[in-house]
Image 1 (cartoon, one colour):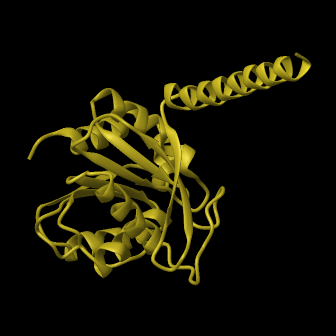
Image 2 (image 1 turned 180 degrees about the horizontal axis):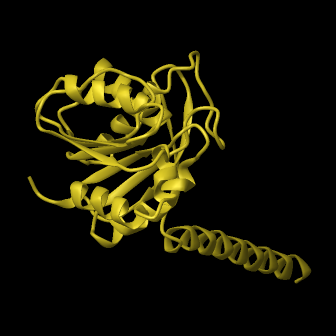
Amino acid sequence: MHKIKSKYLLIIVLNICLTAIRAQSITEVEGGYELIAYTTEDGGVIEASYFEGGKDYVVIFAHGAVFNKESWYFMAERLKKEGVSSLSIDFRGYGNSKKGTTDNRSLDILGAIDFLKEKGFGKIAIVGASMGGAAVLNALDAKTDPAINRVALLAPAGGVEIVTESIKKMFIVSKEERLFTTVNSIFDESAQPKELKVYPGSFHAQNMFKAEYGEELTNLIINFLITPK
């Protein structure tokens, strides 16, 4: 009799634990996103936050050197309300993301693209800022996937021009910031369709969201991403 009671007690405890685990998982999703991880070509492991908004279109967010994946959550939440999914990544060396055999951040972008294609997405946009913008440009130079249809870059800190005409491009920069000339050069050498938005002042990349025009900038990027061609 004692053994039977112990058996039932164990079952009850296990059920309570499983319920708690399920509740934690649901809480993550209800919080707006779920944490995922994917591997890169060189063996890196990248952690990212996936916001599910829809099944046909997704946006990758790539942060700057002094930021992280959380810095894009405000925009990911806006896109989710518009029915657009997004994936905000932590580059290798940030958060829980681990580098592989190289320091090549462009592999983190290419890995994100492969991950999302495996999830069934056929249309992908990318938003990158400063270091993240450079990683995006280098990734597109290494491999331009036909699934990518839009790219928005805030003051990319280097990289090469985008030569494909199948991608709609937007470059954003402050008039008085140190990378103004570099960004203009990359823009000039990139293929159409493209547009350049120049804001006053010297705010750099994601710091531009702190400027008085921050809400306007947010709406500019959101509209660029969701407006049909």
